[in-house]
Amino acid sequence: MAICNGRVVIITGAGGGLGAAHAKVFAAEGASVVVNDINEAAAQKVVDDIIAAGGKAVVNTSDITNYDDSLNAVKQAIDSFGDLHIVLNNAGVNRDRMFASMTEAEWDTIMAVHLKGHFCITSHAVHYWRGKSKEGKSVDARIINTTSGAGLQGSIGQSNYAAAKAGIAALTLNQGAELARYGITANAVAPAARTNMTTAVEAMATRMAKPDDGSFDFFAPENVSSLLVWLGSSESAHVNGCVFEAEGGKISLADGWRKGPEVDKGARWEPAEVGEAVKTLLAEAVPAQKVYGS
Image (tube, rainbow, N blue to C red; front, side, top):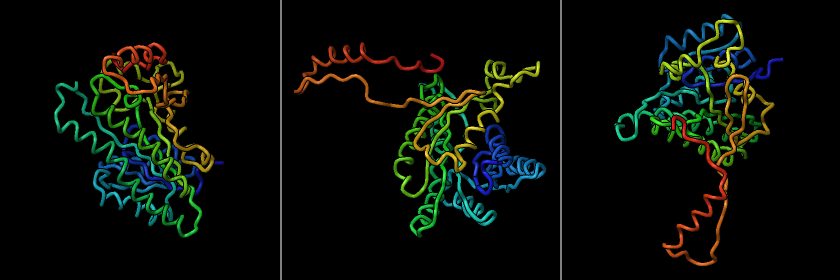
């Protein structure tokens, strides 16, 4: 039985890449899909493919960086399919540059699409779900955010992107803690898959290329989609505030920030004493993963 029968999902940036793969797998698992993308023709192609395969989908072109316009995506989901259960924040762009050369525009674009883009539609959806909860109606809602290994470990040449994706991971923790009372869970996934964004660099394109021998296509985007579809289903109600990583056939749970070694003098440290204290802490700490590209 399809695990998302009767559920309604908005997927941002679903006109191509990971978003399109997510949309098609959600539809194949019984969900009605609002395919959001500013590229209407690309979104329509995904909708056509879903309908041709027997699924349900509509196009939405709301600008996820515009708070007022984002409300239209939520309204369209409810008007078209009668309800809304899942917001999958997937849309993203890159403006890669070393920090010393980065422009304000490159920084602002990434923050707008990734961080604000994760806020706008989700905010309106949460207002809808909270309203239902306060009316005594049952709510079984999901927020699924898209973070990145760049946000969890850092990535050379992507300080803007890494900062935004780290913010999304922290946002997910807060949403999970704050919204559970309304029947809403929030989780995030850091995907690794073959898309136009990840294959823009020749070395990555070569590494992620589809194999010619018919063997498992490790970097096919739909490999990642399976985890997100399960997170969107009713089966995942007990999972909240988690950050996963997914690539190929691998699913891992990010360990997250947690308190490490501690030294306690029992009194104020003199500035000259702090160096030895930090030396002790660093010697006892579990080494962090290296920044990508370092």
